[in-house]
Image (cartoon, rainbow, N blue to C red; front, side, top):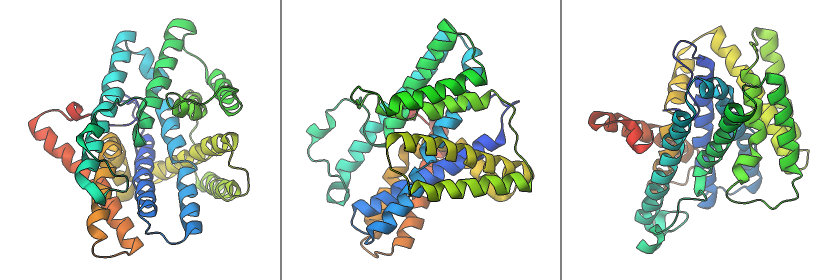
Length: 333
């Protein structure tokens, strides 16, 4: 029930689950924050932009980075057909199913939805190119199929140095491509650098630890976040900052995870294991909570807390219920 390829139980790195937990928490917070802005409940445009940029600077690059870290080993352990089919069932099936569920939820919400869906004819659409936040699943699907074909039919397994070179090449090529961007390929190309950087990172024995490493990583992370407000927000800078911030965030998580496995660390790891279900369904619960709560109060803090909790707890309740009658994979979890 994760957003990236799972490592085997014997080699599973807890820090990767914790990092996914941090990432999915930021996804829920970010969408709740944008939902409040779309509903006209955030009066300060400056406040909205600052918080929005701090989150979106790195949380999606982090997911692509994590998805790349274990992919080469995973892809080499399985027959090509089995690996390809698993990408269809784990990425395409949830995308298709939840695109329709999400649209039906908007239709049922009526005027309470920020983006209204009117008439049953609105349900007669193709799920590709992807809609809403489901673009991530399609982007990851394209990336993983491309790398699967590359390492199984063309090059064989590549070294960390080769993946790093490809990451740099992909970042530059996508930033200065003379070709127009397409809804079919935009996400995959925009985050190709982060995904390939994850493949490079997965091929080296990097294990930061200690107070000095933590202080350095934290200082660099804060410094890059502040610097991001001073540089042009073009695609190259967004990619470079996104990948760098994702690597630093992962370093911070790894140091904290190995130093002490506190209750917070275990909770974040648990959220990481449930990240797929949360990703798929969280907006329905967060938006529903906002619609109901807005009839009682316009307090932004209360809305953010309630919307975030609903976006996390709601999908986990669905997971528990579906396990009682069948397999979570039936609904893409």
